Length: 450
Ligand code: S3P
Image (cartoon, rainbow, N blue to C red):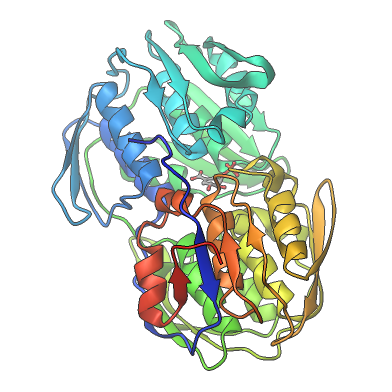
């Protein structure tokens, strides 16, 4: 079930060196898309390494509700018997996407050009997030939607019976919006064109091509122009989901700030649309190396090796890098607290509409732990205190946001006093093995408050 249970307070305290190998789970973005594209294909898609976090499990359940046969074979091995493009059945229950913005926005897209209706809801975090960014472009196909004020869930989408293809310039840097439009374009006749002025993660484009769609990307003066030919027959595939760089960020950043640490995080995808954090950490002086660099399934992959880095320095993070590390700013702000000098992070307005307002959530929690943070509508600055000087000692609110909870638990691994979070439950949405994995490296995380 996706409903969030009783809060799980957690505390993290200074520990000895973190050492060993961290096998982080499968990529969340690719896991959602594997299930969705499998459901839209003809034949049986097989998936290995699927992230079995709650967000992805909610998407699996939703695909069943639209008529696909989704089977869990155990150990991250799944199969999806698809219904084909345009073959979705109308669900007879409300679709609960739990905490997942990616899940709900992509699923709205892929049902929006079929003659069916569906009602979507989620948890308190998801039901507060903006959906007009998706329903506005879907309306151009002929799709109707009725939700709560401010374009919020619960919301009913009435798919277009006779969809027309669209040309859409994405007004915010969002892979979810781009993907929703492309998925809607699958069942519209003719060519759907999506233009993004800032490149965002390109998994949808790559995977659509892999499933046999006719899709091209051109870099023009307008930006990235993606053209999809509608009504293809998608063919079932085998997908081996790579490990998630956004989850790798947590053991990597922890190793950089805990004295004596040396941690290997194998098989991490370094797709340039996702790897901005690692570039940034290296610019800050992190001892972070890429070992065994190779290509797998057309994607650059490496084993990341992170060692304790006592002389990190604050930097200016280029605004144009934001989309490639948008989920990693919370944990970057933790590393910045242990650096010398200020780390300035501009161009990050989107952080305010994630699972929580991530700038605000981190600012309040970091300040309670003795770190100075300044912010504006689309920027924030963390003043680092240098290694060994971060006080800690506070309990932070996680705001139903997995990455906020994990970031504060990483903070507590190197502060003078322990750091607690009021609720570590949301961690299960993306990184269900976070506690045992970090514990296995030597971290001291307990289920208690203080
Ligand atoms: C995602 C896109 C990003 C990211 C999210 C996953 C995706 O969201 O924050 O965790 O899989 O497409 P936005 O599209 O809102 O930037």
